[in-house]
Length: 193
Image 1 (cartoon, rainbow, N blue to C red):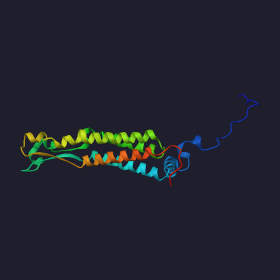
Image 2: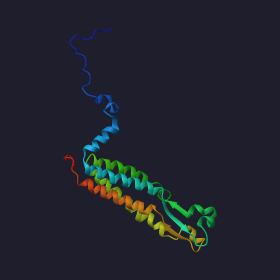
Image 3: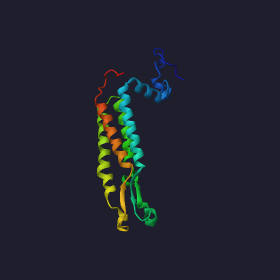
Image 4: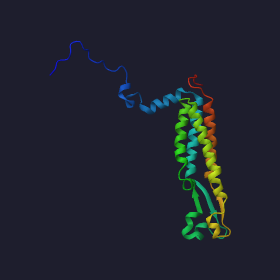
């Protein structure tokens, strides 16, 4: 075996806990995230709160009834037979779960706008809210106003809007409000307590 060189000094141990990873830090990742949120002030709580509620509304809208068909003489499901799946539709069935990734992105950008005071993240929150409103009015709402496939078979069949559209619109408006509030913030300014 070779002898260590006489002029070399052994490496000193690390000064802090940084080299031990996230789990070794005080309280772990979640604790650090909560501490950052607490230190960022009340306006951050409002920005993140609005973005979180908006994201939850988008997920709920996906699994809510987008539209349903009514027939005067009996229930749609009774008359439609094998086509009874066309009697109602959720938001997810109509636009292939498009709002779920938007909700996840909305929450992530809301965090950046709140805790990181990121103006680009706040602008992204506004853009996501605008996209949701476009989906609600341009893609989902027209479906509720059509006569529907079953109207060809049943003369008194009518389409009705479900709860998904108001949920989408409310989520989009809250996202825009969150982003607008986030744009008022400046990176590096003192927390607003």
